[in-house]
Length: 594
Image (cartoon, rainbow, N blue to C red; front, side):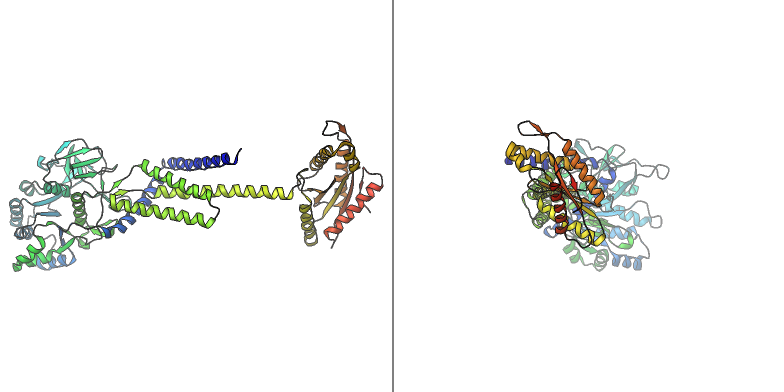
């Protein structure tokens, strides 16, 4: 095969390795434990990137929060003696804020039951809500059975108007029960939305639920309800995993029918005005303060005090109040700024491209350091690329699958490349120590092994013996039959020696027609037995020459064994003297004594 063709075969082989890796990952995807692990790590990578890009984002300054913070909670407890505060106070808050002309007042708080101790306060609050059409109230859904609470029938005015399409059920959007605002408030206003949130498996909230399904009907999230009114939109359309508000605003949905939010910062990103300051300003008649803070603003009212237990973990902060989640959701709608996660096909395409790039580089470079540097550069560049894709285009490219595939490709191809190098090294070493004609070890290797075995004997007492072999009348044989036939005889003699030796014995070509066998862990009597066995086998063998003619060949053999403090050359000289004696005695024999 031509060298160029071999190169393409190698590329095809490594490309196949990449696709096998992806097949293996796809197979692992059938196991829920693997999917959960991948999902958890990927979610953490999303949080990391969100935290990195928030400094480049600007929250909508028209969104402000009146917060019941720790100081306000203490102020309320000192002034009113209990929580929740009387409804009459909320009535005065609404009426006082309306003088400051805010666009919307949105309560991220539940007013579920009448206050039997303060019916007058309830009436005042109901009237305040009725008289101010820009006030929004909250309720939520749950899955309590009718044995605990009878599921209510909701007023049709609370439903979300759907112009077209359907939204398939999901455990996150479908509920069987509801906690409604008290009846008097429900009659006073139709500006009521849902404030349910849903954590991911790791307890962090990354998504919002735009639309809820209850008894077969759709109901809007509180912030979606506000957004529809702000944008003057009458109804939505469900299409291709989107909730379409108008041509400039649409909400992408993931497989759970939730939407992934972009985050604008940590807790406190939106301006917070403590409730105690509002109450104090109203009491003192400081209308200038109220107008400055709330005129033409969208005002959320909710709790941020840790003692009131409405604190959530989000990608950018482990302690964010629920009211800030709903504010962030509205901000996303107004900015059309939701995150869109790419499909699995796109993730796999990027993974394959990156894996092929890293595989090609590992094949081309011979430097281990460069390979590792390139690997980390690829991983780092892809992380930066995915981060900017999230910042500029609101696209979530996954990191975990590409990272796993790239690292797996690097490891597999590098190991394969190492094994091939090792195989090449072994082949090169074999060529360096092997005689090309007889395929026995060469003279250099013979000398190395003689030194090693002599040292082992002198140090550990590991006895060994040496057989020297010479083909009888080989020069005359070459002159008679030619050198090609002589080579045939040499190869056949070598094969007979190997067949009649142990695998632990070291058969070598000593030089010319002479050959040697180092017999490890073998005494002289056993070595003589082996030598006679080889001598008999050669005598009985019919040698085939280059022209096909068959002839007989004999050998002379000298045997020696190591003694204490003998050097390798002394052992060789003793075996050579025995070989010379065998020739003097008429050849075709084994001699072991000088």
